[in-house]
Length: 439
Image 1 (tube, one colour):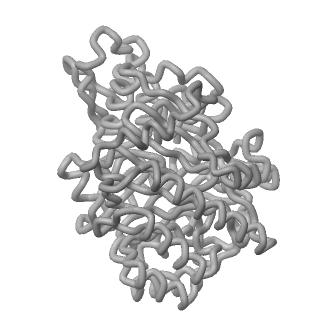
Image 2 (cartoon, rainbow, N blue to C red; image 1 turned 30 degrees about the vertical axis):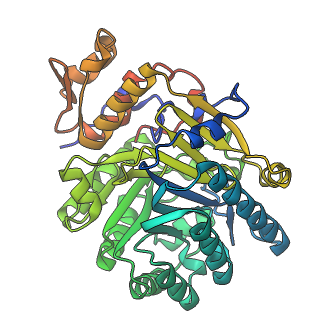
Image 3 (cartoon, helix red, strand yellow; image 1 turned 180 degrees about the vertical axis):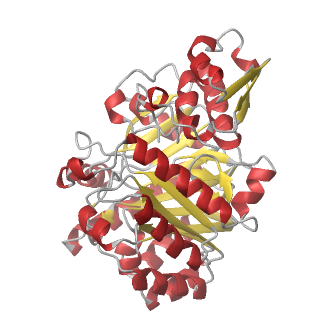
């Protein structure tokens, strides 16, 4: 059973897709930090690539991603030229022998590109880097997906895809600026299966305007009937002070915190009841999927794409706002696409901000990762820095248990996982307005 404790959910907290979080990013002191990090990667170290396409055919009002509308093809062509330059610059600094084992195309909407442009981009990556049978994954907007894309994804060997669904209710779609009838989603699913996609994720949301329990349940029913291997069920984060396009959403039509909590509980129990294994606090996977296997084998990880079975310690981000992650460093590219292009026109790596990971950061980050992935973590590396007093409200209500140096979530603790994880985050009081509701 999930019990509602509003006082423990009152403080907005990070999603912890990195630690330290993006709120701690700042200009880096060393000019060549990324260049040095790329050169220090061991020859046999597996490397993942993340390629960011910050454009969509249409802009949804709820979206907090770094993306703009494709309303001038010249802008997109210029961006692709800059991205090709960045690929060459990074590959030259990475050197030969580094194995690329995974590639994720995200956005925005990668299928805002024309299919022929995507093939050209993929071929440039394959030429510049050493591919070792990489797993290829792509985010898809079903509204712009057609038969040509089926051929393209089959050609590049894509096996994983994430479909932006969000909601299947027409009234809610109108309220968030994303009109997407069920038949468009159904057709895209069939085409993705034809392309060879064996692991399909649906991105769904709760906490949207005009959405209640019955509306969410209808979307869950329709989604489960299409049987995606994975479902990500996120709570909508309404932060118009950070994401100006969200000002088009009337906050008066948003469900309150108790309604959001009940929706999260419904989503969890519905999906588990339909054969999905809970992965952390907002992901679900069928037992046959790689993500479920990673959960059972203790190989689960959490990074900028959310929960993942990717355990690579190095991810190189390519594109405007893309983030590169190393064991002791996180760096982010320039967000503004115009400045990103300008830097690359000068043959400069477009790194803008980042953060060094201290040993203390890495220890705290491992606790937060394990707590969110598995519901338990070993605190022994923290020494005397275990935040017992801050954990006490959760322990007192059996939402968490401290047993020596081990912390475990209680049976009803998952809705509070991010709030409990925040107890281990010494930076969490900074810029709280940037973060989302804990549920």
